[in-house]
Length: 129
Image (cartoon, rainbow, N blue to C red; front, side, top):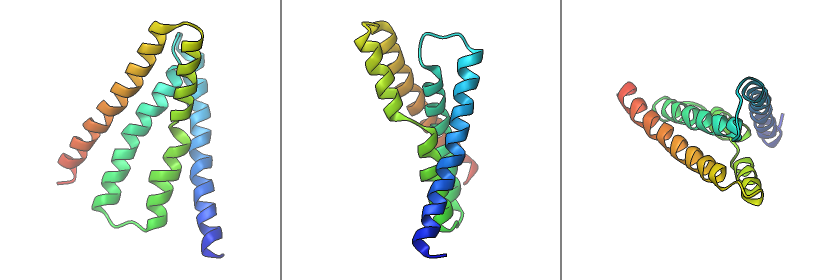
């Protein structure tokens, strides 16, 4: 197998597994939690922020092959988190004159994802010392 085909397979597998997880989480959140905001986008963005720092910490402190780091950190998480969906859903709230929901959606997505990045950054520092 050539290197470029190998990388294409790694990228596709990472995207595939997280895209499947994302659809499952969408179904889980939307079918079990009553809501007015797109909670599934918030959930996957916060979950992605949580996972990326765990993976980054492991990849930083332990020697992993580059294709494993690329698979886990980049391609795996790109298919899970979704800034473009967040932007589209936020726009539709604005377009529908739902300003309170728009501001709440933006605030929760930004604050919670940054909060989870910070929490896991400091936890990984403590754990991996």
